[in-house]
Image 1: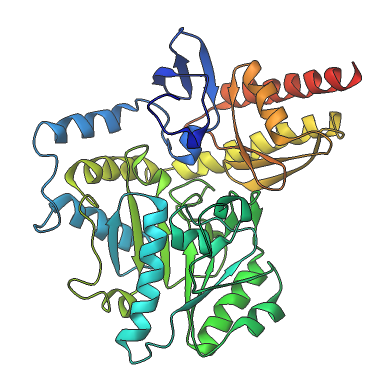
Image 2 (image 1 turned 120 degrees about the vertical axis):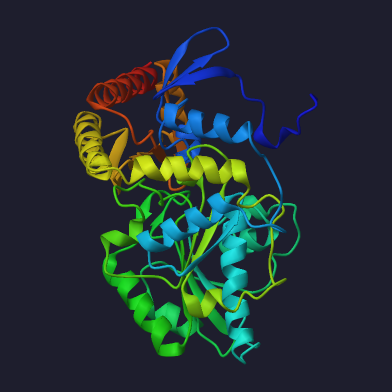
Length: 395
């Protein structure tokens, strides 16, 4: 056993540098990166704006903690509020921390307003909200819970797109409804706008908070700054991370004022959250994402990628049976008896990096800066991967 815990297995590839949409391993071999650190490296690798922001901040100040005001944190919060439904932001370091903060905020809101009995959250089958004990309980994936004892209490899971089940799950203890607008780890399954709209209506009817997990879908991944902007539905609380700082660890909880004002001094905190390094990079990342036409280009790239992959699926229906997703969050549903990991391995053999997801889906989460050439290269690699799988099954 090596010195690193084996919970990630034993990866066989090690990268030493990245450039744009490409990664180079320790042997100098180049890969097209359509994993992007699992939807994290929004602007690819070594983007000059992010490198400059990080280097400049590193030479001035790294960390002071939230005992003191951090000007770039205030600036980032003000910018996000102006670009979203939120009135205030809490910064942390990761997606699961953001989700913990979002659920805590929902519970705190009700307690602060005289209803401490409201503390449970309704969540959805197929969801993934992180790996802390509470967030494992929010998803109740048996594979992720194995060996960690009984799930933490406080979460009631219902089937997706079933409003009768959701209504039946509401009790006097229910505080919030929690959902990913597009279930990422669950297989890139978009929730319908009607379903999200009904969620919003039920939350309002029963005095519940609507919490969106946009850890994977946020910050331009779908072609809008946040995925729920494709709909008419607005949450009360939202968790973000991954693409928020283009690869530097950062997360955020966005909330409306009634919720945010309930998070009084001492109710929550983070030592590293919103530190000067993270905020410098996050602000630089947001500069690029909000530049004219950037998100329009993401939409066009996503449409081109999906069109190319649908062509591959049409030629190999026994291997890829569906294409789903939004923007540059694209999933290929792999047909049994083939598996997503088999297709991913075959793609890696022709120098394309991808990510598996639930429901036998192989994800493509490329940097948002990819162009036509990289899309053509990626589609060609999936074509070659399908041909390789077809040949192996015939042998």
